[in-house]
Amino acid sequence: MVKQYDLIVWDWDGTLADSTGMITRAIIKAAEQAGLPPLTAQAASSIIGLGLRESIDTLYPGISDTQAKVLATQYNVNYFAGESDIPLFAGAADTIRALNRRGFKLAVATGKSRRGLNLALEHTQLRNFFHATRTVDECFSKPHPQMLDELMDDLVVLPERTLMIGDTSYDLQMAKNAGVQSIGVSYGAQSADAWQDLSPVQQFDDFNALSQWLLEYA
Image (cartoon, rainbow, N blue to C red; front, side, top):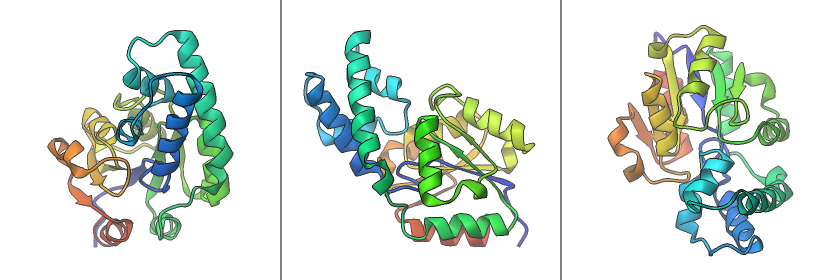
């Protein structure tokens, strides 16, 4: 079957990595450590996909720079204490390898830090299967289209031949802003209700179904 896409761009947390619970716990604990009003799990998970500073500003509008710095520091300590234990979703690594073998260009666009993504790629042994990556350290936070724009420029792929896969409205809005088609997955941080109006070409509630579609139709 003729390929629809040349470039497949993946979000990391909640899309490839089963990290939603750990991130949620890390930010809730960090808020407590920083002496800030407590967060619910729903509020904490709602910001997954944003850069850390954007997440803090969303959760605590008007927070001072000093408080934000304390919260960010505590979050990083909590996150990196458990980062190496975060698993990929079942079948994710095999799917990435299979898509690579089939000649797709693969990339990551994530709200993670560069340090965080590099560690994740090292732990999962997937670094060599991605042709390019962008993090919030190098680009504007999602949903700004800069990550996708730069990835398409670097890999010389047109928007109509690019597919973005993510688990949040930030991912799908970024795709829309860049003129790129998207797939939404509801097994990560957000339910489908959060991004339904952003018109993904497909949506899936488990990784296995996503994998089967990509290998057959992408």
